[in-house]
Structure formats: C-alpha cells, structure tokens
Image (cartoon, rainbow, N blue to C red; front, side, top):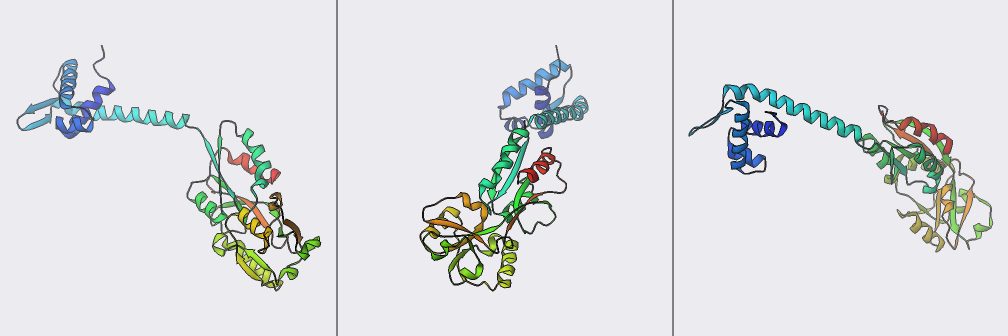
Length: 294
C-alpha cells in the first residue's frame, strides 16, 4: 500500500504553511474534522508524527520539517508537467487581421488558399482599420495583419503586396456618369465624401499631398464609417465618394463606378505586417501565399 499520494501531500503542505488546521481547511474548501482525520491517517501510514499539537498551536515536527520541502518540490513538478501537457495539446491559432480600408472580397482568394493549408491550425479573422490592427500586432493580440499602406508600422516587418487604385462612386443620373474616366478636376465643385484623418493618418496625409498637386479642394463631407451606408447616400444623390477599386463588388441601384484618372496616385496599397521576432508556425505559409493571392 502506498504511504504517500498527491492528495495527502497537498493537505500536508496546506497545514504546514498555515500551521492552523482551521485556516488550512478554509483554503482547501473543506471542513476541519476531515482534514484532521486525513493528516492523522497520513501520520499513521508514515509511522511518525508530522505536527505537534498543543494549546499553544500547531508546529512541525522534525519529520514534518524534513518532508515539507520534498513535498512542495513533488507538487511543483507535477504542476509543471500538467502545464506542459496542456501547452502541447492546446489548439494552435493564427489570428489574422484584415483592414477595413478595402472591400473584404479582395481577401477571399488568399483565405480560400490559406484555410485548407493550415491543417490543424485554426484561423481567426479580425476586421478593423489599419492603425488598430497594427496596435494589436504590436501588443501580441494578433499574429499578423493585412494592412493598408502607407501606415505607421513602427518596428513591425512589412511585406508589400497588392495595390488597389482609387475610383469614383457617383449617382447613376449624374452628368459625369456618361464619361468612362473621370479626373479630380471634373469633380472639384462637387460634394465629395472623405474619411477623417484619425481613421488612417498616414494614408490621409499621402492623399492630401496628391490633392494639393492637382489643386483638388472640394467641399468634403464626413464619410460614414459603414461603407454600405456611404454608398446608399451616394446613390441618393447626396455626394460622390472616392473609394478603392475593390468596392466595385458592392452593387446598388442608382449607383455607378467610374475609373479615376489619378487612381494609381491615390491607390491603397496592401501589406502583410507581423512582429519581427514572431515564431508562429503558420507565418512562413502566410508569407508565401499572400503575394500569390493578393
């Protein structure tokens, strides 16, 4: 018959740390009588007393002082082994951010190729503005992110990918809808929806430089956060919108898209960003597939 087991050692260590049976019982979420009986049974099995009990309190005997560091070491080793097994069996996730600056359909070819190739690794997607994605990668909340460029990426590693030219969304009944290609000069007197600088500071500043080169300073309207709301307002004749070409996938009655002469100058460029010291097992695959499918 075994004289020691992990349950008995746990009870012994709790009493040895507190030197008070009532307090130890509270920590162990049990009552004092069964704890006292368990310690007495352990002492009987070992053939020696582990605690001295008198009116002054509880104290470890010499045998108890000998057993305590060994018992603590055994319990620590068991806990480390359990944690190691949990880490080994925990599912691996690839937490990937997708910028909301382009239409989500642009990422479908990459995701279609990536998902089956990950095998046992699960894919978790987060859509958000690029600055928020960059902050999440830096904090370790995301493993990588597909972001809009230019962006302030700090110390992250960035792999440049696709370029999404800017185009123009306008009401279908507008006179400019008859043209196949529209220039900034054509819409300088039109109300134009545009995003706030706080949403994408680096890209906003880049576009402002392009606007200044072409003398483009229309009456800008604050752009709604939701692109479906934005396009509904354009279709209703409230203004025009400059958007990445990928948004052509969103169809709406009363809305047309036209190529922009300065579209390449104002293009949203995409990049894959990740932490330089990342050792995620899926990163080599992601770095291989992203240029092929974007």
